[in-house]
Each structure stands twice: as C-alpha cells, then as structure tokens.
Image 1 (spheres, rainbow, N blue to C red):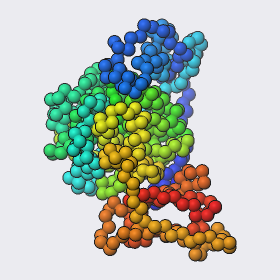
Image 2: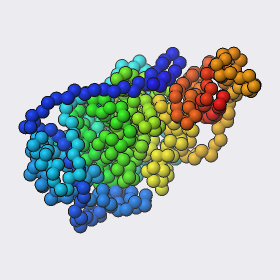
Image 3: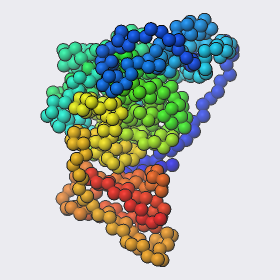
Image 4: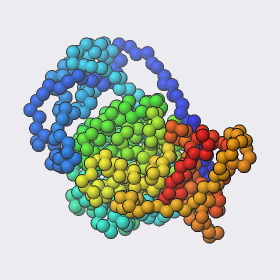
Amino acid sequence: MMVSQYKGLKIRACFCLIFLPLFALSAQDLLKYRVFLKDKIATGFDPFSYFDQKAIERRIMQKLPLYDWYDLPVTTEYIDEIAANSTIVKTHSRWLNAVVVMATTEQLAVLGQLPFVTRIEEGKSSVLVSSFDDERPNPVDSNSALSRQITRMGSATFEEKKLNGNGIRIAIFDVGFSGADKHEAFEHLRKANRIVKTWDFVKNKENVWQGGSHGTSVWSCIAGRIDDQWSGMAWDAEFLLARTEIGSREPFSEEENWVAAAEWADKNGADIINSSLGYTDNRYFPEDMDGKTSYITRGANIAAKKGLLIINAAGNEGSDDSWQIIGAPADADSVLSIGGVQVCCDYHISFSSFGPTHDLRLKPNLCAQGHTMCAKPTGTGETDGTSFSSPLVAGFAACAWQAKRGLTNMELFKALEKCGSLYPYYDYAHGYGIPSAERFLDDGKKEPEKTFTIEMPLEDLNFNKNEENSYNIVISDKYFTSEPPDKSQLLYYSILDNAGKIKSFYVIEVTEKTPLTLMKYEFYNKRLRFYYKGYMEEINPGL
C-alpha cells in the first residue's frame, strides 16, 4: 500500500484483487475467441500501394523498414478455414496475427486442432460501465480553466515560434464525435481540409458524427477554438477520427476495435494517437497491468514500433477504492500515459489514477489539467477527467514534434518526459509533471537554481535508529518572504527504499520559511528525494 500526503488530503492507492463470477456454459453457447496464428503465407505485399504517403514518410524519417512481418495481411486461407469452423468471424489483426470469432465450445475444440493455430484466448463479451467520466461537478471559474489549460504548458512560447501542429497527423480514438461536423470550435479545421479520414469501427462506416460527444470534447482539447481562445495547442494539425467505443456501456469488442483503429491509423499516416480510453477492473486484475498482458496493450506496443507516438489517459480511478491504479493500455511501456492536475496549482486532481504498473514501472509519465473547458455537441462547457488531460498533452506533443521533426517517436517520448515541470523528480501521481514548451525548446541548457537548504546533523558514534531525539532533517526556503505565497510554491518529496523504489510520496504547500521538519530516525536505511522550484536533491539520512 502507498499513502500520499497532500495538504489537507490523504490519498491511498490500494492494490486489491477482484473476483469475477464464473458461469456454466452449454456447448451451444456462443463465446468470443481470439485465435492466434503461427505464421503468414507470403504474398506480393506492396507498401507503396497499401500505405498512405505519410506512413511511408514516417518510416523513412525514423529509419524503419517500409514494411515488416507485422504489416503483412492475415493469410486469407487461414481466415476462410477458421470461418468454416466458427459461427461468426468478427475481425482480424495483422499486427497480432489473430482472428476474432464467435464460436461454440464444440467449434472451439475444432479450431484448437487446426495446424496453423498457436493458441486461443477467450475474448470476454460481457458488458461493463465506461471507464471515462464525461462530466463531474467542479466549482472552478470557467475562464480560469480555459486560459490555463494550455498557457500553463507554455502555449505562448510555441505560438511565438509558429508551432501549431502543422505537418503532424493525429488520430483520435473515442466513443463518437457528435455535433463536431458542424461545431464552430472546428470550423478552422473544416475550412482548411484538416480532417483527412474518419471511420466508425463499431458500425463499419465513415460517419463518426454520432455515438456520443466525448470525442468532440477530447478533440477540442487538441485543436479547438472556444470563445475566441484556443482550447488546444495543435490547431493546424491534420486529423484521423475513429469511433471505437459503443458508449456508456462497453462490450469487450472495443479493445479489438482499438487495435483495428491503430492499424488503420498507421496505414493512413498518423504520427500521434490520442486515446482517452482505459480498461480496468471489470475485465482485468491489477497484476494484468504489466505492460504486456491485455490485448489492447499488446496492440499499442506494436503501434509504437511502427513509429507512432501513443498518448493515453491514465484513468479516472484514483478515488475508486476498488482499483485506483492505471488501466490498459496506459500500462504499456511505450505509451505516454497522462495523469490529471488541478486548475489552481500543479498537484494531483483526486480522480486521476495512480501508478506504478504492476511490475513497478513509472506511470503516469506526465500530467496536464484535469478540469477543462471544451466543445459540447451544441456549445461549450466544463468537464473533468484525464480524458481531457491526455489530448492537451497530445496537442503539445504535435507542436513539439513539429519543432524537432527529426526525432523518432521514442526520442520524442523521452524528450517530452525531460521537459516535464518536475523532471528529474517523479512520483506515481504526477509522473515528471506538466510539459513545458520553454523546457522542451531549451533542451535542459538552463541550470536550475537551488533555493532551499537541507539541515541534517552529522552522525555520532552513539546514533541509535530508534531514538526520537535530536536527529532532524529541516528543509528551508532561503528566499522565503512573508508575502502571501504563490500557489505554485509546492515542495515535493518521496521516501525510497535502497533499491530506488518509491515507498510513499508527498506534496506540501510552502507557506512558511521552514515548511518541513522530519525525524531522522524514521528514515534509517531509506533515501529521501526532494524537489522544489526546479531543483532536485536526494539524501541518505542513515545507512
């Protein structure tokens, strides 16, 4: 268990098992299965006729092969034989070399004996409530939310250098984009023909202007214009819009839709995928959040191998005692996972999911404002969720990639982490902090100034780790004045074991010259890491 102390707020991340009911099934009950194949029969695959020119350019720019085994189509003969031995073929994935079918248990036995089948997974088809929240009440001044959601990331710095996402193609996967085809927030994109393609993977047609408005709100946090202000930073990017979600209730097919949409986005030249979606406790256990187990996470990892930057919301389960940690595909090592912070200041907003992954990797990677002003089907409004933190960072990433177009996707990934407001400090609520345009363009050339002191008495020969007397660690802001403190004056610190794993982490609002005094004996055989106003220091109080 990990406890994080914020001013006036304790946040506890629990790791608990959730037991799912088992149901007896007759041989004639149809279930969904993912049938994985051992090989592909070579065909005359031509990448120049299959891929959009932008996809070819992405591969060349990042020194990737124009195509590889993952790009080859699933063998038609295999699909036909699987279709003959199942009830319905729903979809297939060239990346995962898998065919998704509906079949009886009798048909399953036959499928398992086919010589080209390596394994079969059950693709559960029950229903669960959507993992994102479209709206939550939050008494925040709307003008403050709108102005800060991109200015706090340094939008003026990018705008001054004419960095607005031009030349970058962004795919958005969501529940639908109701009203967006006529909404004034996207008029500039329609006039400039910036909507390249759309596809509804739920109904297999082009029309995505239905199904729900969550995607409309998300899109506006990348490229919208609200009340004569930009609500996202990449207003001159190109867009691929995909509907992968059914709505407020999600059958498990949506992971398969997501992977199909990722293959479609790759084929059609996307540079960035923004996905404000996540799958957690109604289909997985916490130990499955290991970056390699879920179907969607495996697809996301392959998308990254294709040179795409995948950006995904960390999740809204931070205050849900039944889960709290990130969901899939935010658990993927190669997915830039985004948490949420409050409008007033740069610390965690209560609903935002926590890291780390089950195998203790850092998540989230970055964070952004979790309460935003965005487009609605017939106007604008406020809304909450890491669903909106993620597209804010996607817009930032598009401008960043425009500035340094020669970076590969994973080089950009690391550069985005390094420009976080907390870097090199991190924790499991904020990651490396909020991305900064100034830091990104500066490349870390500006050395931070240390503005605090750590007073730690020297050891003596009689030191006893169990004594509670004079061994104190005092953190002081040497420039502190009695003026009302700036809300951004936050002291972050973590307690780590000797292996460097975070055991707990804290954020303190600095309202006095000496905001923190710690008893040294409590940190015997531990390490302490402090971050304040751009500077990080680590100490080892007692070995």
